[in-house]
Amino acid sequence: MNLTLQAENLCHRFGKISLFSDLSFALGKSDVLVIAGPNGSGKSTLIRILSGFLNPAAGEVSITEDGKTFGPRHCFHVIGMCTPEMRLYEELTGWENLDFFARLRGIKDAPDRLKQALSFAGLEQARHRPVKVYSSGMKQRLKLLLAFFHAPPILYLDEPNTNLDEDGIKVVSEIIRRQRERGITVIATNDPGEYEYGNKKISLAP
Amino acid sequence: MNMEIKKSPLHHEIYVVFIKDVKSELRTKVAANAILLFALTTLFLISYVIGPYRIASADQPYILSAWLWVIFFFSAMSGLSRVFVKEEETNTSIALQLAARPEAVFLGKFFFNLVLMLGIALVITPLYVILMEFPIRSVYNFGLIIFLGLIGMTTGVTIIGAIVAKASMKGTLFPILSFPIIIPLLLAVIEGTSMTARSASFAQTMQLTSVIIAFTGAMFVLSLLLFEKVWLE
Image: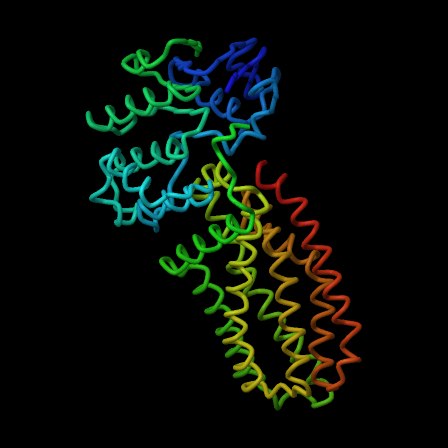
């Protein structure tokens, strides 16, 4: 599989405030791009543009696989995403949340993989509790699993270490290591400790 | 795009979305309670203040039919938009947009709303018929009109709920948008319901039944076509 995520001359602005302009890069399999920059520099906005949730003011994002090119909105089913604004179904349990998305994605051997995934994230003891009683760190772990569970070729992580303890941060490192073997990873962060995840880096100015 | 990841069959996705909404509703009971309480309050208010005896018998089929559908309409207004509004307000829509096809989301939520409305109708309709002494000539025709009318109303209210969920003034916008879209259907179902109280003949209700089916079919197809734009906005 020859996979490429390409951004060409991306510009975005909110009103008169320009966030970034003429941003171009190409990512291939095993690439991990770190988008760095202070608060308000447009990291999350760039993730939203790359994933197809926001149209850029100018420029284009394309995903190419084996010579076929798609817009990001046609690739939702192969994207994994974990961002601070994403939320889980609070009234459902951790297991039910994961099971819901696994079933939607057509994962056949879901129960076995669910057990493994929840154990990997350290949530096996809390799997039958409603998400509303989870701590913010546990919710973040579950969100990371939802993003990663279906083995997506492209994974977007916005501030992945938010609210996580040391064990949680190890889970993030392992997710990124596994994703590197499979596809493309894009991480938005303002934590210098997370820069080491990437082999490519973009710094956005405020 | 990536052959390792297979999409689930559409009917399976619809079922999964439907079951998730049922499970969520059973845990929170917000939509069911809102609709049922509104419907019951309105029903008992009408039956207590007016009742069947203050209406001339010649007017009964028309007035009682109109009130029944007013109860259904405003009950639907009070709860059915929640399936989309909740996804937007709690920011769960992002993950759902990534994982499910738009048509699966629409149909899953449509079936959830339909089951909810049919459940409410099963409680409200017999009570209404008894308390207001609604003179049904043909139970079959009456049931058919109610069933078809609820499908049409649910279709309209579901797509409007999806549109309204993206707007900021949700509470106001929902009835404003729903009213003109659902009025033609309401006129047909009210006339159809009153006809079942005037005549037992299926042939007489046939024309109105066709209108309701045609309107519902058109609204359903348009909703499916429109939904992707609305959902991914």
